[in-house]
Length: 384
Image (cartoon, rainbow, N blue to C red; front, side, top):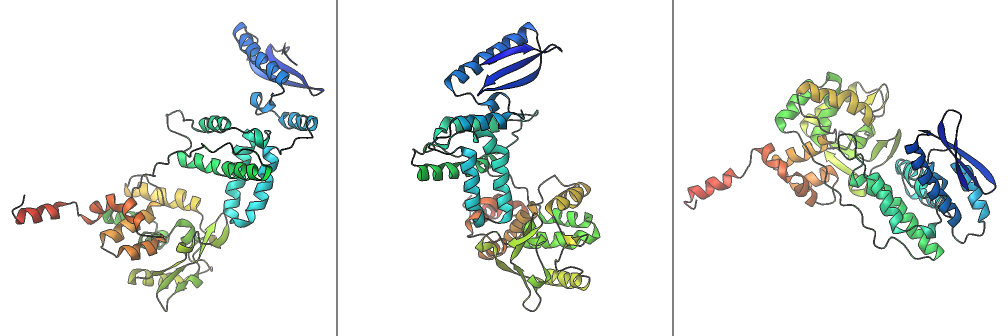
């Protein structure tokens, strides 16, 4: 059972006796009539859950160091459970699956388990997790900051819940209980707003770029390479004889790995501008990597905070993500009437559909083609 006590300093304390152990949890609430009324309401719920054997310590004291002790005692009392607890099965699932993933993705999944899923569902048996648990948890992730903006996007929330869905699906199959998420639907993901630069803005940006980094950004604007791809670009990937840039690796979290997808493994043709640029850089190369900082491959944080955003400010350009160099390359190549198949290959896309779905709205501004040519043709024919 649980009781309320008043500490010598006048603050309210919860005193719980459960599983033969005493748990004391202090609060910052002073023992005023209003606070005592709230505390007694909480106490009533705690005692009701203790009687029903549904009490979960972390539900009331999530930051307490005693959560682990309580859950260990709770599990000792029920050693004959037919189904595993979520945290045990989730850790087992991770160990079974991680060999299929790159180390960078292993880190993402491990972080998701440790930061979100295990703290929320860890002490629940896998067969007792219901759709309602997931709905309430997802709702708790959809919080806003003080300005009313969402802290986590729908895409991020879907990413947090993807391992959970995979874990529960496998658990239901292996332990033969009804899969509870048949009616679960992912949140609708809004496409991120793109803000590519037009040719004049690219020129302004490069003019304001520090001299030692102008070549780096030129390559990004000309090729549309992803950050991880250009950071993992090595001199052995530059084929001067055939004038090709061979995209084979990426640099993520301090490690060199294979490119993202089979389509990402591609050869880019070097125009005269890039051929001259790489020849010039080769003469002063000091590393196996083409672009480095202090002798090591670049990382996205350094590029964003020390190069990209300061240069945007200096050039008087609107704030946008460094990834816009990729969008800019796509839009300007479309505006120059390059073959869509070539552009898709350059970007490492699987087909041309993404080109027109994502970039079509920006091409008119980039190429100064806005529908007036059609109108003038109709006027010349006397139709308008």
